[in-house]
Amino acid sequence: MSSTIEAPGPTTTATTGRGRRVRPPVVTSVASLAVAAASLTPFVYLIVQHGVSPRLIFDEFTSPGVPELVWHTIELAVGVSVAGAVLGVGLAVLVVRTDLVFRRLFTVLFVLPLAVPGFVSSYTWVALSLRFAPQSRALFGYGGSVLVLTLATYPYIFLSAVAALRAIDPAQEEAARSLGHGPIGTFVRVTLPHLRPAIALGGLIVALHMFAEFGALQMLGFPTLTTAIVQRMTVFGDPDAARALSVVLAGLSVVVIAVDAVVRGRARPARTGAGTPRPPRRWSLGWTGPIALVGSVVVVLAALGVPAYASVTGLVRSFAPDGPGIPWAELGHVTFTTTRLGLAAAVVAIAVGFPIAFLAARHPGVLSALTERGIWIAHSLPGAILALSLVYVGVNWLHPLYLTSTMLVIAYVIMFLPLAVSSEYVGLARAARDYERVARSLGDTPLSSTLRVTLPLALPGIAVGALLVLIEVEKELTTTLLLHPTGIDTLSTALWATTNGEVLDFTAAAPYGVTLILLAAIPAAILARRTLAQLD
Image 1 (cartoon, rainbow, N blue to C red):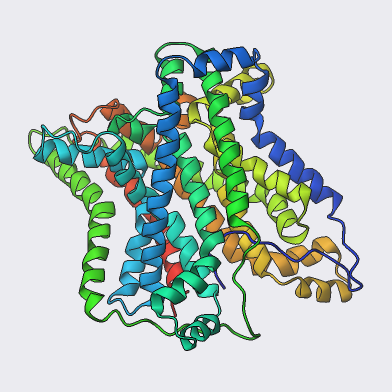
Image 2 (cartoon, rainbow, N blue to C red):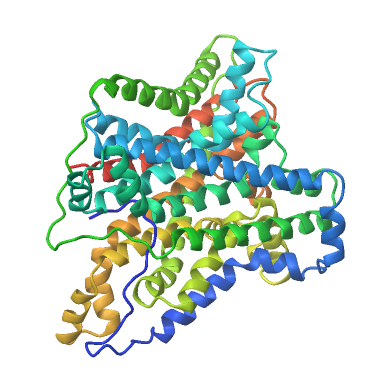
């Protein structure tokens, strides 16, 4: 059973044995609407708090430099999504469809960049660049940002593509080959259309990540709407201008979500027969084998080698006689805090996201589409706006939660709920409804059949959702910087405090960077292990 990210495809309408549509449970519908509405709190805050007039948005949008920021945001999202799709699908094809040597090892290594935060990756690349080419500015700007962020985010598309490739019936490809199509023609005509939903979902995750990215772009010197929003809030002290730009960013997010719905369409991998899926025949790379091997090594070195080298080098300097040493007590404290917050957010996200995933998998329709798409909007908003909205809510209505760990967990859940829901959907979609019908025929109630039958079958997908949320929480920076309670730091905020956004001294930051990568590597390695199970 697959348990990696897959694109939600259309599901069969829930019906009775006579074909009559089954209405979704009222409790599930209400819970889904409540969760979706709560996740839209930051967006509502943008519109309601002090009002954001069309005139203010127009004035801000037409002010000097803002159209360029909008263009930067769009081209970054498109560039990283396209580059990530090419890289992620290409690597997935290598490990699933070819006889690439060490393919199992490479599968694990291709997933592990998920453990490297974007701002850590950019920091290490810049630190390495300044060390070996101090006068070079090649890494800064659009090109460097696309390179570094593609290497940090392509695993989202890689995981989706691996799962989708394993779900395709090899008989379809074999039929195309028998009709005279070569490997490339077969891939373009038969395989690639089945990968469209997976690529669309992975691309959506990557694009919305780019909309919300701050730390990496700040270091790489590439201004976008998000960097401008944070600047207007923290430097200029102009929250109205920040809100106006955030409305523009939210509008872009809605457009991207709509485009994803069109691109994803109703395609889903199909099988031409029943029974257990069999693995496809692997393509022989022949003389291109060494080229594929070298390319795979280059990707691993760029995505993992550079952060590892810069981090370990800084860590070694920390142990030097004249080095700053390692603050073991503080390092242990922030590691425990990061783990505690990540686990709490993962559990809560899985719990509150289950009704939305259940509604989408078992009762697809307008309601499920609205709730599922609604939760993606908050995923694209800058952490600064999310933090500002939660501060407003905390001060005015939930004062006991203001500047507490609970408020921080709420922020994490709002930000990363789509990752949990997408994975839960995959697990639920693979748990056949026939088992539920059998349980109901034996006297089980709907709730009992869901808990005793559906939930265990969907558990692999649910576990993947929890792992993805855990990874993202451990890496999150912007919202944590603005919402963490006094005296409570995470690995990300502790690392950022040592650099202060600069790239002059990585020695003090190295212990936190290495620990952060190692900590996030644990759930990433579990994801890689699950991905390996699909290769056999």
